[in-house]
Image 1: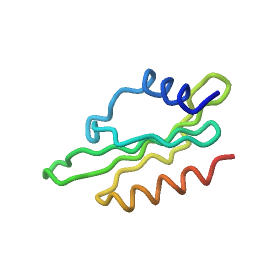
Image 2: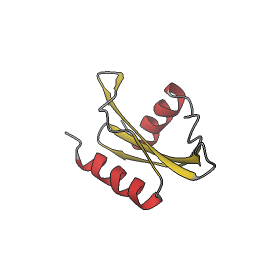
Image 3: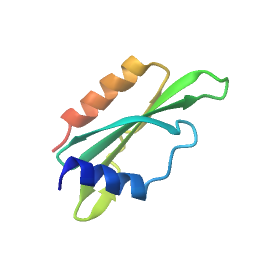
Image 4: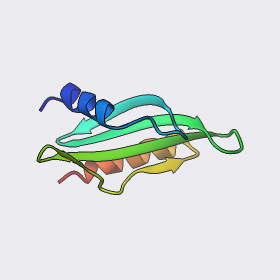
Length: 87
């Protein structure tokens, strides 16, 4: 499956995160999609979310790598590591 098709399936399946609703972008490696998004925390501080999902056997799996960050740099580092862990 091509990256664009996998991202489209991801968008259709998952709603926006209420804490980080503004999508910055997507990264794909093999069957893993990583979404990077931003929003505002409870004290109106900028936060970043990383959502990670694997698509296997026509089902979405949660590898439990999704996380929230207060720094875009830390979010980007985590996204990179999540893609490196693809089996």
